[in-house]
Image (cartoon, rainbow, N blue to C red; front, side):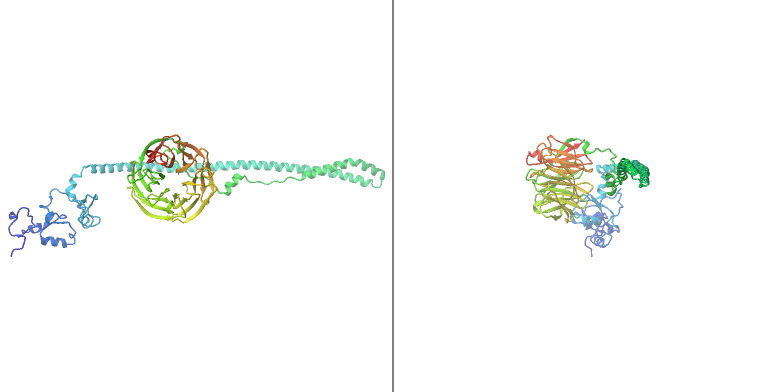
Length: 575
């Protein structure tokens, strides 16, 4: 009986389009193929195919049957097979490329993870890869990496030299300062000792003179005493002698009183210098190690702003013109914005000059702060909570968690797991779970506009808006609630945006029609005013500064301006 599908003659009698089982044909048995294994590049009859699928080594191979089965095996001539084993299936060789995910894998990978993807055999596409744009780019990157590594080697050598030089110089500076301190203390010690010795010598001379006068006077008085004793029985002579002594007695009386007065030497004691004593008692450090800018970077107070460009931040989902109430720079190329008018936060790509992402909030945001490299905190006063949001480089936002607050917390600053939340006239210091550690109030507060951490994490700044005869001002606080410094100036009409540079230079928006930016020292002393009477600065509302690029980012208040002034972030290059 003839087995179905078997040809007892050779393949010369095969019908058009018929292919035969390759394992069987090698034994001279010509059976029509029912399937094709893409992994092995072989055709199989029904029996061989069944066996092929049962073997542990081949059970997961990709099999093509029916109409999808090719009419001939893939050409194998001059093909250099890949010998790399799959990282996930170590008994399989990497043979396939998924175009959808730009990844390679074995047949098992494609069956299990890329069923719906477009898959190509590596041997079919690899010949065109060499010297392709992607290959050339990869070769260029590798070459550049090698050059970078050599540059790093030079940098390391330079760094080793700098470390030695820096250490040696610092030790020398410390020793020099110590010598200066010692020399100064030796001088002032010698001065006070000289004054002490002078006073001691003068007092001893006074006492020595008193003693000489006392002995002389004592002899004079005893002489009178003897005369009085010798003439005690001679009335006439006693009377005459007594009358003659009267003048001398009066003189002795005056002299004795003067000597008693001189003998009352005024005592004294050493009092410490208040300044030096304060330094000792407060245990002030001998000094500090301050990193110097090896690239001679200017301080912002020494720079001048020049308008660079503007970025359109109004997206298709925005119903209204933007009102950016707060901004937070998260990297030199990314800035996140709180849009009060459109109830959302936005991520902006500075380099590309475009809006990357947007997240709709459940209420109007009033502030935003960076918690870590991919987490921001947004205040939502009307819901009495702080919303934490994750964000990705692609501009996608996702809710993390929220923190309930005791009222309408409007403004926020974050640093080192510490939160500062501002209400209308008070400030709360919290841990990152929302537990209140300290509540701070101040009599001058009428409407807190903004707050910011100092970079030392030991102090913070608060701005207060003019209201009810309370002044427009900038305050510096410690975490005990003590006011360390205050800035008040009649030219500062009102305040809005507040940010600090890494060296704690304070930037404050002067909220006015011809607004400007006030540059203050860390002690709240005015250094300068920038961007005054600039056509790009009208009712300046929030400001951010990037130290790496020396760029200033500014958003204006939307209420009084045309859309073209409010739907953009202004960029200024500090020169």
